[in-house]
Image 1 (cartoon, rainbow, N blue to C red):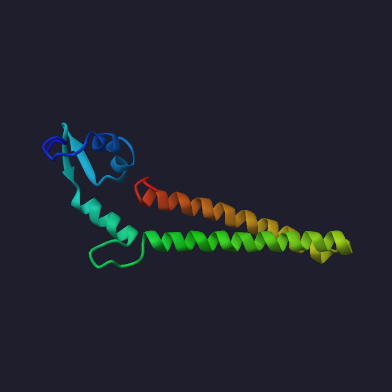
Image 2 (tube, rainbow, N blue to C red):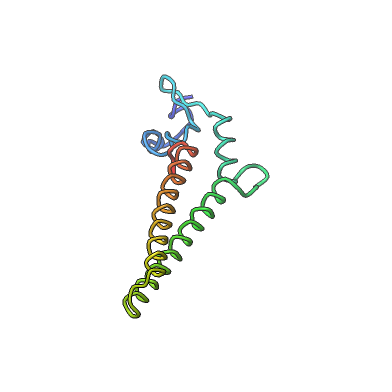
Length: 128
């Protein structure tokens, strides 16, 4: 049916050009809108809002992202502590090795976080 036949507000067509259209739940063909039930079910599963209300998908992704951020923060704090120790007590070989290790770990976590974020965004159909 068309937007006026469905009694949808004019904002609906504007939303279809943005985030709502990017989800792929509604498909426009020749001015008429169709509900893609398979895509709706997929998004419900990804976001954990399906008929059973199962958690997973969306919330699991948020928990993983939060965990990655917390680990990066801990690594960053440990790095700062080691740098302060090096300043106070002089740079020893073991402190230098630990600082370099933490820098490499922090960079690896950052790259992994960016990769993970891109994967989640692609899975959600770009509507993150």
